[in-house]
Image 1 (tube, rainbow, N blue to C red):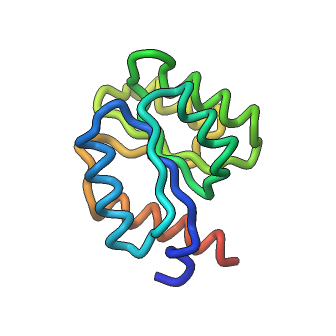
Image 2: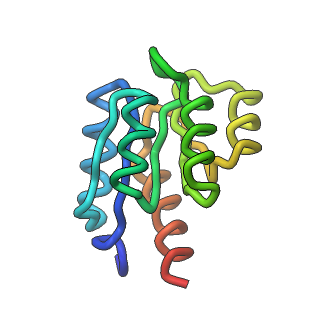
Length: 128
């Protein structure tokens, strides 16, 4: 995939299994720069220092929920590109996150094809 190796990705999820799965999919697509965060506070700090091209952000987390983390990231960078992840996402939460600036939404369990499809769209937009 052209440009994938240059992308910087931040994965934010309290589940180590979800982070590992997503990392594996992205690495198979050629992404070399991936950082992880366990919670919302860590995500915002890593966003500021790492300045990723794309964030995969879980909605349901123990400390700061994903929708609030999304708000904080968007306050740092209004052009942040964020894909929300959730196993418990309701239609209302999805719409709320999209209104707050999330670019897309993926339901868990993570499906490799769905991740790759959305990821390729992001890479194509970046290459334009």
